[in-house]
Amino acid sequence: MAAGNAEQAEVWNEAWNGDDGRYWVQQRERQEARYRRLTPHLMAAAGIQADSRVLDIGCGSGGTSLEAARAAAEGAVLGVDVSAPMLAEARKQAAGCGLPQVTFERGDAQVHRFEDGTFDVAISRFGVMFFADPEAAFGNIARALRPGGQLAFLCWRSVRENAYLTVPMGAIAPYVQLPELEAPDAPGPFSLADTDRIQKLLDSAGFDEITIGAVDEPMWMGPDPDDVVAYQLGIPGSRAMLAEASAEARAKTVTALRDALAEHQGPDGVTLGSAAWLVTAERR
Image 1: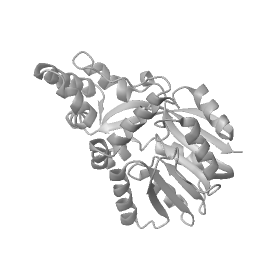
Image 2: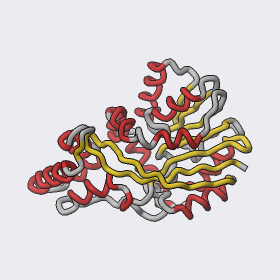
Image 3: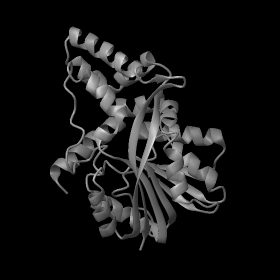
Image 4: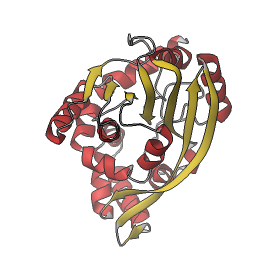
């Protein structure tokens, strides 16, 4: 594992336990709405049965864990995440939904001590791209599954294929310094965009029957451009980015972003394209 990867993973962990984590808790309902066309692909591929024991990796505020618990009414679901604020929200949501079969633990799935062969199914919705050592992480997940157990996850394809990012980033690029999102092999949202890398990681971790399929779905961003601008510029990373810009640049950023989003306003709100991989595999 490269030292740089460990350092980058720690940056993500600190963010999710700080302002970023608290912001995503505040935006929980929006996030579920953003993913509402993507989540059904994951749940269908997972094949959760009424008595399944399910592991949800990078469960965040618990949206997919609750979906899994509804399917595994006679089984059990464990959601694991590194973010204490999001896990607190997940427990609150589970209690409110009356789903005692779902529990949550704080931990990094890369090193978390799962009992061998405990789970029938492991799922993740955009939660497996941030490991400092993905080889170790997928190996640990494989050990947590029983032989023949199913892995199903969603991960992002390349940045250029995801209009939900390219549209706003293209609009504001002339006025602010944009972050690097596609550092090769480094922990980050696009670290598994390369299908060859996914195939090699899963094969070496102990998985067979690997399938990787493209999922393209519109993503609801918000009811109107002003709302989406407030949401996107409220993200802690965006606030930090704007803080380094001049007042004139900040004003131009807001105007450019609003204008770009207005071009994608429809009767249901602002919608932009998303592009993901749906990956399934079976533990040997």
